[in-house]
Image 1 (tube, rainbow, N blue to C red):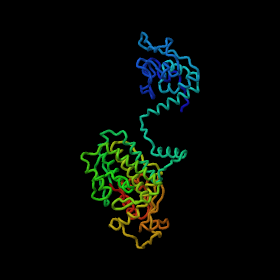
Image 2 (cartoon, rainbow, N blue to C red):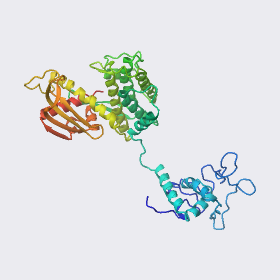
Image 3 (cartoon, one colour):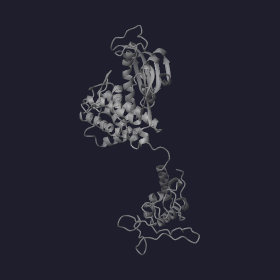
Image 4 (cartoon, rainbow, N blue to C red):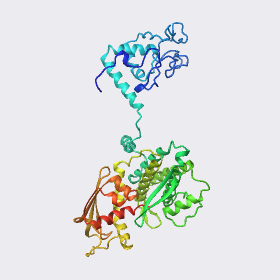
Amino acid sequence: MTGDRLAPGDGPEHTGRPAAGPEGDGHGTAGPGTGPGNGTDGTDPGPPGTGGSPTGLPPSAGGGERPPPAAGASGVVPRPAPAVLDHRVLTSLLGAWALAACAPEEAAAVEDHLGECGSCADEALRLREAVGLLQRPESLDLDPGLRTRVLDSCLERRPPRIPVPDWAAAYDAETARLDALLQDFGDAEWHAPVRLRWYRADEATTRRTTVAGVIAHLLTVDGMVAVALGLDDPLGEVAAERPTPASRTEAYWRAAHVPHTRSVRAPWREQTHNLVRTVSFTGGRTGGLPVPYGDFELPLHDAMLDRAFECWVHAEDIAEAVDYPYNPPTGRHLHRMVDLAARMLPSVLEARRRSGLAAPVGRHLVAAGEPGRSLRLEIEGSGGGEWLIPLDSPAAKGSAEHEVAHVALDGAEFCRLAAGHVTPQEAAAGQVGDREAIRDVLYAAASLSRM
């Protein structure tokens, strides 16, 4: 706010031309015959049954519709005579004036009043600035944390009768965000090419599909959680070679006689609702239920986080394909995703060691539950925190006293590394200590990725 006040000539034009809208974009409508609610002949029908303007002023002495003002000899429509209105009515008209929605006589009265009343002039200036914000060219996409904050505020006032378990909240939020992104997609966007990326045997791997193909992929992999909960399998009669995410997805893609289209959105979204509804009705007691992924399994509370993570990652893939901005999850949910990946790293390190992809265990074996060599993983920014990753055994305990290396990354960047979207060489912002241990942990994080 600059403290400037609007003078009578600073508002919508009243020279007979259609008034400019916010920011002078020409969309305003205070001129004759152009205002919201006005007839094509310049009349202002007002509220139903009144036959007048919003203020209740009679349309004319004769009780009929007002004729459009006549142009003078010069072709310029003269400024209408200001209506005689009291201060209370003029104040109530400021919002309509800012939107250029007043009748010509009302606009003239408001503008004359603004030159005399400082408080109304200040309020009019604030309202015009607010109208300008409504039509800004910049993106008005919602902050990913807004939905969570609104829900939290509502639930504080009235707790839900059947709450969503805390461990399912990230999945609920991320599926809603992706569905909002898809809402206005046309055929061109649904068929836009998308390249899925992940790491396999320390090699970057890609698979080409479309936006619709990505949603089909999410549908089939979420279906593994659905089956564990006793819900219908989206594959139906389609048989996958192996019960893995990749095999199920390939089988679903092959079964389609034509490329997937926008029609895949409805079954995917219905399934996401069913998953959240089902775990909510169990009161969260199913959190420990095992969900098989083919080569491994996760308890349901971690599987829902895994699905939230993949939903966000593939939403970014889709947004990139259609050249649209997409923000990371809210900090609370991002922290949980990072925590899941950090907890999985020791087992992944052990598997890579058995495959010869990681350095062998040091000279000293560590018993289960005992402290051993550790890497400190420091996550900065939203979702941040610190995790001590045991290096010699998944059963060992991370120990600050036995710390041999320290890696610092941004939270979203670490998740993109775990998704195979960032290479291990590019990932770490800060690295200190045992270079071999750092390399092993970064490559282990990348190997968490899959199609």
